[in-house]
Image 1: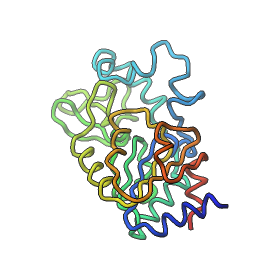
Image 2 (image 1 turned 90 degrees about the horizontal axis):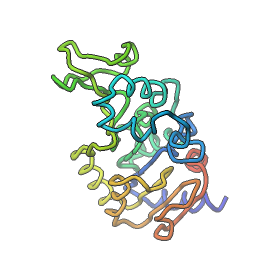
Image 3 (image 1 turned 60 degrees about the horizontal axis):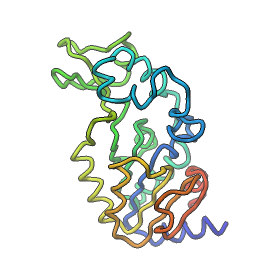
Length: 238
């Protein structure tokens, strides 16, 4: 396919690739996205998901937050798909220098990627808001109601909720990676969530590639735009 040839050529000629991915990277692993017509934000709940996933709601309705979080935000059965596996392979080849992800599912690490910057945190980590001790995901799953630390403090998932800021170090590392790469592949994201989406503006390299099912605000600025599933496209790369 001509599409694959173009992307294949870009990858072959690249020495420092950075991958910037959103929810569309994980949908093929069975993890629902947020903004599509079948996404989480278009389902009917008594309280809007955007509200339940906010810092204020976590503080004021912690038990209700955890009920929603365990049911809708954690998917322990999900496995890495072709996109995750190809990116890990490119990293081992020395071509890919970093994965920057808006996802919180940990599938990039499960596939073998090592340099992963998680802009919105990860469901696989939680921490005590009182003593800052970290806990694995299983601890949250094993607890009933609100999980608590041995010190008595409430345990919070290490994910960025609405109303919270992104981790400064993660953002700084992402900016450095993007500014130094020669190819930036943006995939599976509508580029609608800021400040994360604004990071792509730091790209100064040769080839800007976008892979997404639907158009985005950045399409006209890209050197290559592919409207398709991320796993299918990256799975064709040799």
